[in-house]
Image (cartoon, rainbow, N blue to C red; front, top):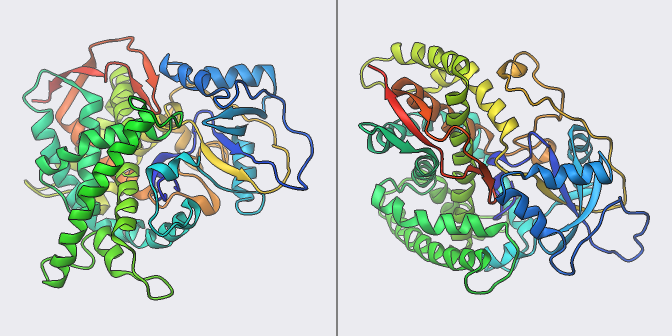
Length: 457
């Protein structure tokens, strides 16, 4: 979880179905040895266009499978997003890299990220990521998240009442983005008013679309739009931060109400507090990480439940048992979440088959070779997560080892609350049965997944 000073994208970051790692390497004095098979493509661009275009065409796996077939089932060399890279494939690669974090590899993101998320302290993304990982656990560990369940349930109720109920047809993906972004705004910066939330929504969409793109800073390019959007959002966040300082001083806000208050009141080991712009950058990253990949996951849950009625019935039965145990107006609590075992197995299977991102970035610290590839089954089967679950390192949506995503429990909560409100209100059917899936940079249905709703009586 290191992207935008990264508590970030890894709410669901490491690939599940392919389990890829993009290992970027640089020439170091004295370093040598053979490189894996592959090619680096065009000057500067490398193979970025082909990598991105396969996603736009709805077949992101083609870039990987073509090279696996041509070069190696374990590892191959390429050139992506302006950097030379080695792509690791599979469970064995996951195990090897997670076991050697900060020994042979370390977390890394393209240098272009610093253009979108510049730090006023001039420290690197890597250093900022370390600071964030120390700060986040107090808010994102299960014990702390228990107090958020009722808030999530409340926001979800408002979301479905406003966007889904009394409608014959809806488009799922934009509504899922609205839900997850609303939650992130409420829980991270205590912004709940829908109009205020919507003010941020479009700039955040531009930022998310352009961040992992070819870093060409020219008018009209996704990267250029991402930089402009980040500057606008940062300015708005600084205004919120300034007002929060006043509210804390006057007792109108509390030190523990959200992550923003914690950042304002927590000093580093030298007694220094973060600059307002640094806090704005970190909140910016958290807001994206707290909603963007989760919205993709929620959308594909709707897709698979529409296609697999027997899976829907299992989720519906479990969620209605919980709903029927509640008094009128009573919100969900932590114990209710723990009862949603089958629903979470379904969500995990969705994450395995439709991972929100295609891989994670690492930089090599020393020469080494990759273990062999492990291929996973393609059938949708939630039962694979019962008992001890899949084979170790074959399913890693939240990372592993020292890079285990601190937002794992937060992600689980927002997905399960979404599923609860969804199935207790509706059945649905896809309006476009064979709708294409495109990747830009996350997998999404090409038309946003329009569905026809059938409310329960």
